[in-house]
Length: 164
Image 1: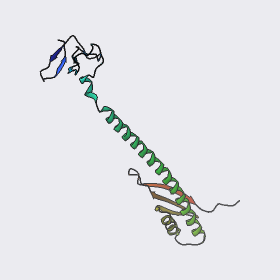
Image 2 (image 1 turned 180 degrees about the vertical axis):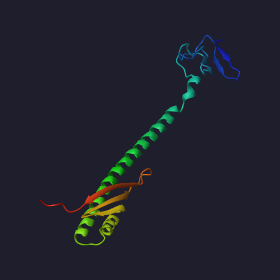
Image 3 (image 1 turned 90 degrees about the horizontal axis):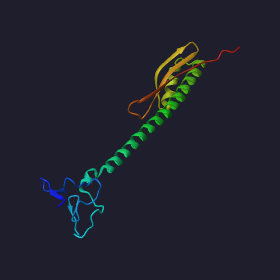
């Protein structure tokens, strides 16, 4: 017979017969599994019990692929959020500094307070504000919703342009 019993009680093909080609070892045995029909033909393709070791690996690979796509989508969404916040910070800084420069030209004693109120109306905060002659410089920050970069800062400068 071309089949022998292993120490754990399972059947396997004898040494000179191989299941690598997925062909039956004997007319009654198919790679360690007794066939139901005793009149089966030799050489018929059969189910190999040894090839089941990687069963379910496609599911794990699919889950990993879905996880990878999710991480990449999260990274793209974070980058998009940072670009939007960068534009908001630049616009808020420009608006606050132009308002502060207009208040300074109109004779307001504290143009940085005006810049702070404009920044607060735009959901931003002033990190630094400085009056340099007729010019006003300010640095504003807007909140992002990205864990590794919670604030986006931009600086701006405004003042009257010399004619002539």
